[in-house]
Image (cartoon, rainbow, N blue to C red; front, side):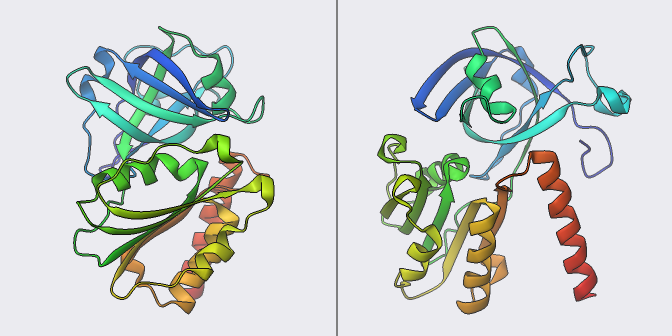
Length: 269
């Protein structure tokens, strides 16, 4: 992973300080250590890091420069929102969705114990709720819940927010702390709730909306068409992106996104 100047971004070596099962499907991992001295937080509420997973049998040197690695040594990466960072304690908080043995990062997070090493690159990010918006629309599933929580915490007293979160069932609800005037609607897969239909049924308040829509690519695509097309929301006032796609691992999904983006640019140009 390179920065804008083409240089490999430094890999931070942190260690697990503690883990917590927040819900049946959400695991919180708190990392710490001197390796996080290089971590420079940004002001984005969707601030994220890349978690690196070495191939089986590969041990990385210290310090590690990803540009020096042969192709077969390169790590797989997964992107996670920074749920919190304490610079004094040098502790970084990440939340992982866990669905049993499926996937890469979820099972890994479930196995972590105190002292385990965590390799990180970042942070990045691109969204924070605009102070001059008349109201805010936040939509996502479990993968977007950390960023939604961060956004709500960042909103000032009385900010108007409409929030839609899709999770498995009521056992996956989390407290969402905010000073905003936030109307939060939890939707459940277990009862076949339709997230897209719920947003479509919303009576939009008057004024300028700042939208954040992230999660599974299917509903994100449908809501992008609805918000930008039918509702005429300004692209500059909307952070809309799929974090994952049902039936595809992260590498496949990234390749599909790149191909889709290239096709869109070719059609526009």
